Picture 1 (cartoon, rainbow, N blue to C red):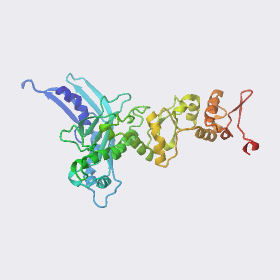
Picture 2 (picture 1 turned 90 degrees about the horizontal axis):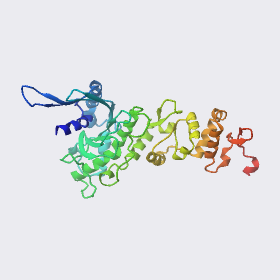
Picture 3 (picture 1 turned 180 degrees about the horizontal axis):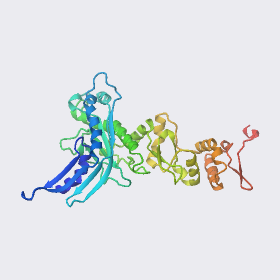
Picture 4 (picture 1 turned 90 degrees about the vertical axis):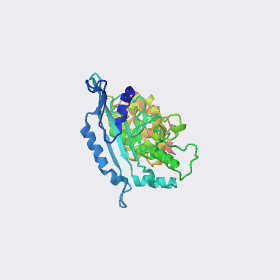
Amino acid sequence: MLVKLKDEALRGILFLKHIERIEIYELKDEKDGLKLLFKIEIVNAEEVRQKRQDLLANLRDHVYPDSSASTEAILDYSIRPVFRLTQEDGTSTEETWHIATLVSNVITAHEYMQTQTDGDLTKHKLIPWVGIAAPAEPGKPIKSARLFCFLPIGIQLPFPVHVNGHFAVKQSRREIWTNQENDFTSDSSANIKSVWNVHLFKKHIPEVYAMFLDTLGLARGEGYDLWPLSSGTGVGLDLIWKDLLEDTLHVVCRDNLSVFFCRTDETSDLRTVGYTESWIAGRDLDNYPLLLQALQALEDVVIDLPDPILKLIPGVAKTQNLEDRILTPDLVRKLLRKHKIEWSDVESPETKVEMLKYCIQDEKVEDLEGLPLLPLAGKQWVEFSVSESCTR
């Protein structure tokens, strides 16, 4: 049991509001006193404590708002705790984690619940409190992601992060309420709890997940390994969180959060950009590496975006009336025309060949007008020009 408790200690301290240290001792003989078996503590406890206390100081007014309270008010914080794990022999290791916490607007959450159920919400004391946690160090994955209601619940997740929420849990604390059989009446307590759990995953967890990715920044380097790219099998409990990636993308694009990675070239500094500030290279551009390098030198171009994100982004952008930023031959022609002075005299013949091949993929040769991509003898490149007779 002690071994299991040691394994759970780090998980147990992640989302608690006040606990900063857990110590486990053994008493074999009173004259020898207590023997330390294991200790976990937050090294930068003062910094973490301050952010927690700032949220808790405003929590009561937020949860029990008066009639003048804003329906947009939220509470949130992001912390980067350093956990030190000390073993029985005195050796210790440290892990840095990134944790985002959000308490969404209680008024709008309860108003939504009123439209979905006919029951009394007040006795359930449901609070839209959610959080995300994962190691902040590059290449350090979570062995088994878990669902939390401040402490771990006996539910594993298909995501690369731990997910916390003020879920309606069953008495065993190993399950959450669901109504997958649709056999609860609308006003029943079981149905209210079930609808609430679905609501947390549909509305509030995407908000805190997007916030987590945004505040994580470049801490783990380039990559999308902490995104919810897989949602499991799509059956059973997985139905509750099956749209998490799409819902998180909606928040990312709506708020133009800087969660996409780009760089000018392989030697330049990595940076993060928002959706509307960048262009996205699709899989088709993988076959045109020289063109891609040229575009990266001209604009902020996001490359190597995972296929699940590439698949969903056009639909998300359309829903929000945003421009489709995934590069196409038409968009590439426009960018090359916009930056013609910058590249026309410096790019290699091999790069220009790739430019030409990609730009005519849609067979709109007439749109090449003005681009110096027409090869002539003597290694010369001149602009395409459409004659008047060709337009008649």
